[in-house]
Amino acid sequence: MIKVPYDLIVIGSGPGGYSAAIRAGQYGLKTALVEKQPRLGGTCLLVGCIPTKSLLQTADVWQRFVHADQEGIVCENPRLDYPKVKDRKDGIVTKHSKGVEMLLKRAKVERIAGYATLKGGGKVEVQSDAGVQTLEAKNIIIATGSEARMMPGLEADPERILTNVEILNLTAIPKSLIIIGAGAVGVEFASIFNRFGTEVTVVEMLPRIVPVEDEDISKELERNFRKQKIRVETGARAENIRKTGTGVALKLVTKDGKEEELQAEKLLVAVGRKPNTEKIGLENTKVKLDRGFIQVDSHQQTAEPDVYAIGDVVAGTPQLAHVATREGMIAVAHIAGKAAVPINKNRIPGCTYTEPGIGSVGMTEAQARAQGYKVKIGRFPFAGDSRATILGHHEGFIKVVADEKFGEILGVHIIGPEAFELIGEAVAAMEAEATVEVMMQTIHAHPTLYEALGEAFNAVYGLSINA
Image (cartoon, rainbow, N blue to C red; front, top):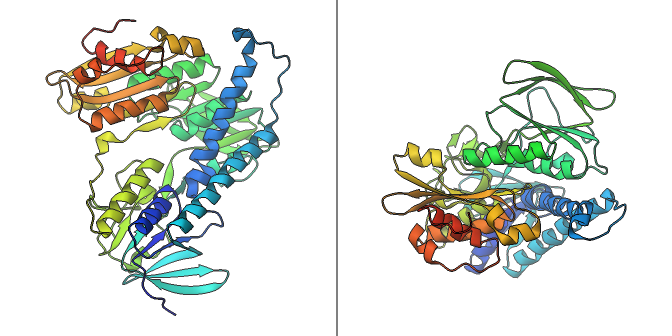
């Protein structure tokens, strides 16, 4: 039975999907959201950004207790109760998943449980425990997200070989952990469990960790990881991975060709994510793929009329929750006939919640030079910031990449305390097309962490005061 057509069907309830559905409801569109999982929120909320950051927050607090004597606080024999840490994480996830459900109801979005398959011509088949139903819509948004890539020959399991899903369900802190992959996921889990007392080894095939970041940021994070006793092997390969009686073992081949046998209680595979574009019926449409990712135009529209795609399934955009959300806003605005400003990929912030944290936007120094800019660099260390010293977190620096001729801000790269919050000023400045000179003249409150940004902008012209 075919129901009265919807104006829009959104497939997937991650940040991009649920935000798009809510915005469509706000615009007065008759909207349905189809989700195969029992809970709403997608990877980010259920097994990604939110639970991970909950653990990172606990790791921060735990470190304050461990080193409380440095601040004159006597805290004898502090103990980490990991089951309670997990309960807190799970509670945060549950609260916000229920919050998404409430927001959808408020926006009059119909929630439909089941697995959606595109049938072409605006039809969507949904399979659930209740049976099969066919829906029809004037427009469809694909927001099916992504899942962790697994190395050839390996399968994830709850005990030893883990992805972001399984590691979040551990009930005890492992004594040792090998992480393959040093992108955001790998380094964040390294930062979490190292501070919880796990012996952590990070193996990265590329020449540096967090390879999408500015090279100076990568070097600084690696320096800090080594200082924290996290073993980092870059330009290295993991071979012959196997389970043992006590955990996992593998052969490490280092960048200089040396081989070493490594063993650990757990192995986390964090080698990237693949789009969920299989078995959703794309073969019944004109949608075009690029290595499994969906090709879209500047309004998120695919080659199939009235079918849009947002988030991790889209070719050529970062797999970030806030990117998915913005893409959802663009798609829905276009559907509703409202103004829709396409994403400027040079204004997308990236955040990594390690210790120290990372926040970045725009071009790296290498990218700016490769594009022919005559570059000026401003750099300011957090060691010169009073608030950072008060917090006991003065590692790292801010790096501004600017065009010498016009003072255009090409990129800002931060590693240090609250970097993921501080990057907001840089994003707003670049979006407003403020120059370095404008930011130099902007008064920054003292003592704050963000006044270090003002110093970094001044440093572009050699005029910083406290360094």
